[in-house]
Length: 162
Image (tube, rainbow, N blue to C red):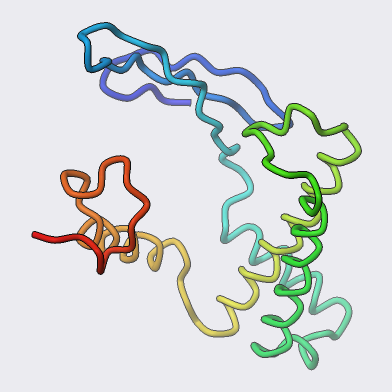
């Protein structure tokens, strides 16, 4: 993993990926505090790799006749429901899922993978280049939610005043 701004990035393996040590941040009283480690994904497979693997999987089974946008969307929503079911009745769940068993974590990984696979295939069928769409959307979000106006607030962008 590459370090940014010349700083060393220390990493720790977490559930098949890495957690990146965040640089220290300044507190309002002038001191410093270390932010919790930020999770990072592995670099492979890429979204294009996932698209290609799913296309091959679907082609081998002659499932393209069923994998039209509406059906893929509904299948993805069903998988999101399965993710929600894993969180149901647990109350607030801490980042990193410290109270979850390995079996629960693995179930979550399976369901989130299903959501991602359907999302990528839906984007393919709709001819949406997801990485480029994300770049455009993040640029729009930066305009809608300038850090100087929204720092620490969960208000909707329409609630901010100039």
